[in-house]
Length: 247
Image 1 (cartoon, rainbow, N blue to C red):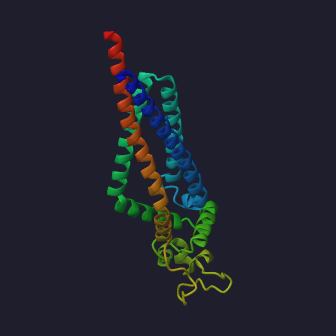
Image 2 (cartoon, one colour):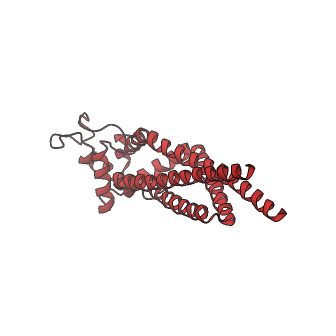
Image 3 (cartoon, rainbow, N blue to C red):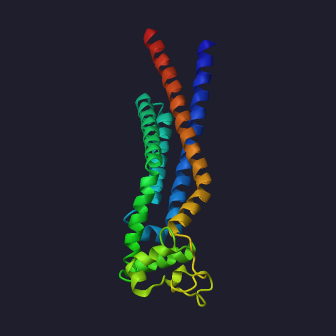
């Protein structure tokens, strides 16, 4: 009876692990989809901020691919009931969890400095407006799509080569309709978007962060659960091997 109970318990742990691996795989697919969607949505933002952006969308996609590969490796380890592979799978889960915690902690601690760095680099990009065709197109699309102007606010254009030469802002800073907009900063600026693009991008990120936060919780839950279940399974397998050796 004791042996039968151990077998049932081991089967339950394996089923739970299979479900955890499946959950982990789904999270990886969602991460890849999220990364691609963010890359498409913020394509021109990344073009403009290519010197300052940290490649968040690419990083998210890469993590998603790694999670899918890791979940696949875990599934093979479970299917073969291979102790060494399960140990390696557990170690990789622990390593990934520690890495994620360190990355989040570092990003949170450096958030103010990061914003300052991005703001400075954004101003450098604005200085290249009308000089670089790709940057000009990227800035125009970004400002029109997010209804923003400049980095922190529309007055940033006064500190750029374009603003100093023309005493105005680009047409992409205009509120709709653009045709009746006055871009001259010496005149009424009521038709110009006042808020900067960095603030608009930050607001967009905060509006969508809840969904990403839920996904992050799902991933961490899958990792912690997987680590605990792997530990229990390895303990059961070690006891089985000890019993066989004693017999």
